[in-house]
Length: 275
Image 1 (cartoon, rainbow, N blue to C red):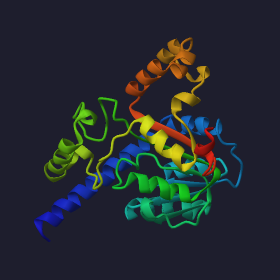
Image 2 (cartoon, rainbow, N blue to C red; image 1 turned 60 degrees about the vertical axis):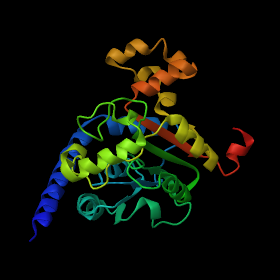
Image 3 (tube, helix red, strand yellow; image 1 turned 90 degrees about the vertical axis):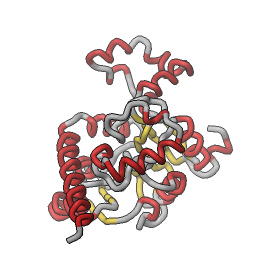
């Protein structure tokens, strides 16, 4: 076996080990419960609801929703992770189906799903606009699209380890840096083959999705005073100001580590009527 093949195999094993650890931690966290809470505020959840988890990995997030009565489907480009998902959920319950595929070419019919999740996907694909159009194709009218992605305004991030202010670097320089990192320091991108190459603002994504026919919200729009715990509870009196005063709201975008999107498909005419 060639040295390059051995090195690639070692990097691959480190990538799988990293994701195994990350997914165990995610399962223990409150992230899934919080996502369920926010989604429930926009979409009535009932048995038989069809959900697509794009970039499903080992299927933990899909399993969380299947346990709550929805019909789950997952797609991921990584065969190893899809095999784990199938072993853990598909063979046990029969309530979810997992396939290997690309988000740019989803193997599903038009208007099939009530909810599509695509967390931490958009920053990694070559054509993020085409990706959102393809996800929109498989979503029903009044369906809900949920995703989080990189925040161009936040100076710190988890995509490139130990590299503060990376989102603020000009795109031309970013391309040079990521090429060097992929070649010499794959540990800085957690051994992935598909590092983050896009950085977004909420306004940019909102404008694009609005043109597709979505009504768009961010996590801030869905937070209620009762959600604020511990030190965040001090923000309760000022929550309406944070939500509704443009300058203060913009400061929230700097504070937030990611850009969170909750978008309801209202139809192709939606943006024309100004709703």
